[in-house]
Amino acid sequence: MLVSLTVGKVDAGVAVLLTEDKRLIEFPSVLLPNGISSGSIVDITVARNHAAETANASTFQSLQKRILNTYGVKTPSPPILRLRNATQTSLVLEWDPIDLATASLKSLSLYRNGSKAGSIPRPLETRSTKISGLAVHHEYTFHLVLRTTAGTYQSEKLTCRTHKMTDLSGITVTAGVLDPQRKEALGHALDRIGGKMIDSVRIDTTHFVCAEGRGPLWEKAVEMNIPVVVPEWVDACESEGTIVGVRDYYLNADPKARKLGTLHGSSHQRTTSTMSTSSAVNQGRPSSLQPPIREEDPAAPEPPLTPFPGGEMSIQPQAQAEEVGSEDEEETPPPPPPKDESDDAEEPAQTNGDTGDLGGPDEKIQEEEETSKESTLPQHMPEGDSERTSNDESSKGKGKEGEGDFNEVPL
Image (cartoon, rainbow, N blue to C red):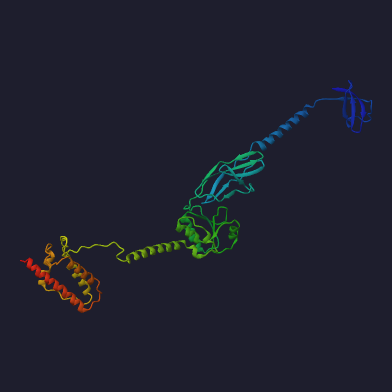
């Protein structure tokens, strides 16, 4: 297409061209022939370049394919969360390396029971975290949220539970400076309780066991705030069957407080000795405090029946004789009475209705007073008094014997 244009004005860089219908077109003066001035007429030919269009289109399509293959095919992967170790009050979580594809990382956050627990520092380098201060034997749910320039990705929810106090399988020990024998014994003790021993200090190390506080492992354990205890702590956990506090098992703690088994044994002995002492005290109490044991004497005669009112009980002289006899036995026992007299003396005791030897109520009162006086006599009586008492008793027995003979004649 050929177009004739009139040059109206030429400036340093732009020339104003006029069409036949008086329209203005700004045109670069560099493209005009040399020597052009105002009023010159120039012919401009305009044509479409199809080859150039095809080349540009192919170039653009290749660029789009490259962008699609680079950024549109591979996307970031959701993080994979799993449990590494669990104790009574802490959980150690770990995940695979973050795959961002071609996207850029914005943040990586940890959520606990649906609420944000915190952001993971240095997500491209950190692959584990430890959550402390949890409740004993409690269930928790965790998941990770990955935010990138290509979108937000969330991991699957992980449900885990802290251990009971009697569950010792979560104990992970790193050994420090120990004798070979003690280190071997420590390994056997951990195998028995279900724990494990590792060679390095890691995030899942629960305790650092050593006999001396030195070495690079000890320094790293102190830097990570891992409890540094002696091997006796593992023995105490095994003997108690539960997790034991570490306060008494630090390197600078009192060694006397470390032997829990011995302490429990002494308390058991103390309890046993207390029980034996109380039983001995009960045995040493007076017999009056204990319930009396009544023994029946088959040889003891049955007491006679109570006489009619106003009469004397036939058992009273016998009781009086027994009481006086017990006092006299401490000094010199009186001679036994003759056989005939003893036989005759028992006969009035068997006769309940015979009261001919009683003079009346005055004599009964007098005999009771004598009985009370004799019962209050001192234990160490002179021999003369004891003989006199026995003679009085024998005379009374003889009187009763005669009266018995008068009333009843034995066959």
